[in-house]
Image 1 (cartoon, rainbow, N blue to C red):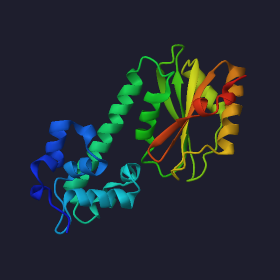
Image 2 (image 1 turned 60 degrees about the horizontal axis):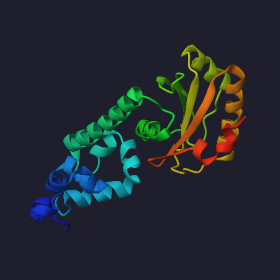
Image 3 (image 1 turned 120 degrees about the vertical axis):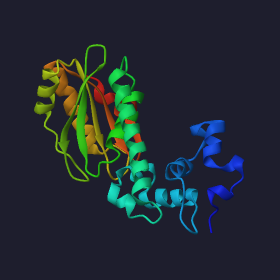
Length: 230
């Protein structure tokens, strides 16, 4: 039988530890336990959160669960499921606000964290881009194609048509791998190279291509800089 939060020493309870040391000191399971507040008979809130994370494949998997899937779990129910979904949505909105107000997106960190939040609920591959002005600031975001679990066909002509309509000087490409594999495929690399060349032709630079998978992201410019050289 797992220990109930009320039976823990006060210094070990998630809420008290958060208040004392801050939210970054807590594990994913402890943060979830604060949201769900109580467990069920024979399974405390922290243990229940650990089980949810294990069954879903981590936080990114939890974010992909819908209301019905969360409510169906023993010990959750509508109120607790709503708390979890509200926290996920707040995280996504905060990331969106940060990327829209960032002074520059020429460093991938802000965009990467935003895209993790934005794409973590997707079960299919999404390819899109962020239009940037001449100072690498956010102009617009476009989900260009929604594909299957393994691929999303990309129309380069449509991509650059939309970018030019945004009056963009550059674009930041992105796509996700729902499988959770963060390794870029040969097709990913070939597509990036083709779009870099296409951008040079129409006067819209391809600044980077971010790949998102399993709650993480990588910058192809950082990993494969040769793709972006003319």
